[in-house]
Amino acid sequence: MKRINVDIDEMRAFRALVDSGSFRTAADAVGVSPSALSRQINRLEGRVGCRLFDRDTRNVTLTPQGQTFLRLAERILNTTENAMAEFMAYQAARRGRLTIAGLPSVTAGLLPRLVQQFLDAHPDVDVQINDVLSNGIIREVELGQADLGFTAGAVEVSERLSFQKLLTDRFVAVGAPGGPLDEKRSYSWQELVSQPFVAMATGTSVRMLTDAACAQQGLLFRPRFEVSHLATAGAFVSQGLGVTALPALTLPVLGREPLIFRPLGEPEMLRDIGLIWRSGRTLSPAAVAFLELVRRSDLKTQIPDPFRD
Image 1 (spheres, rainbow, N blue to C red):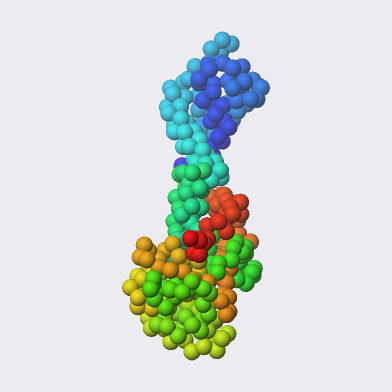
Image 2 (image 1 turned 90 degrees about the vertical axis):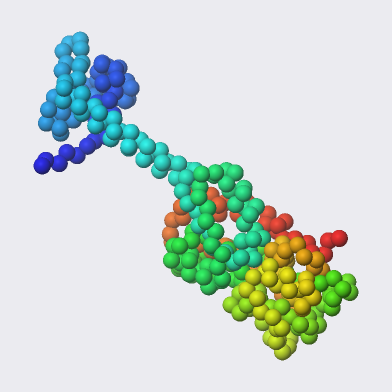
């Protein structure tokens, strides 16, 4: 069976000639001269192997073959135009999919407002949030499973990853009203770990920095409880089962139980929050639009002030 290579410009010329019935009018519609339009129609008829129009000095009419071809041409042009419209919407970040990986403490603290702003401008983009630990974020971005990743702590820039620091998050002491932190002052890590301590699970960014603070002070750190979720830590502390230390950005995730927050020093622990993406790879238009939104935003205003009365 002979294969016919369809030329979209010739198909558009064919449809314009059918609609107008005049070479001059159709030529104006597609932006070519009447002679150029005539050559396009001749080439198309050569491709399909039959006459599509009967024409004389005054009239241009479809042949029976042309009438059948018109139905096929409409299908081809509609499919092409719809596909191009879909691609142009994707290019303008009006359609598509955006996948963001991030630490739960970061995604809960930063992303709700950012995603709302993004969807206000790009309502038809599908957004997926993957809550994972630090190593998982890097892996998902490197494998292309996530377009962007929100991380805690500096990430080594390499041929595979680009990193942009966004803000610095400060650790604070967290306790229950009437408990060991009831006095309104700054507390040291030594004072904190001498109490029953509710620690985040090993492998989390919070736990790594907690361990680092104790190591800097030469403190023996034996937490009374280890939990995987911030809300669980908040519930345990609120119940009076212990105290904890958490970055300020995580505090809205702790729940509604009564808690008090105190400055924490000796040493002061800071957590850098940053964004990573694959180096040397073109980001999708949706990812580019979200990255530009992040860069325009004053993210420091999203960190709660736990000491404000």
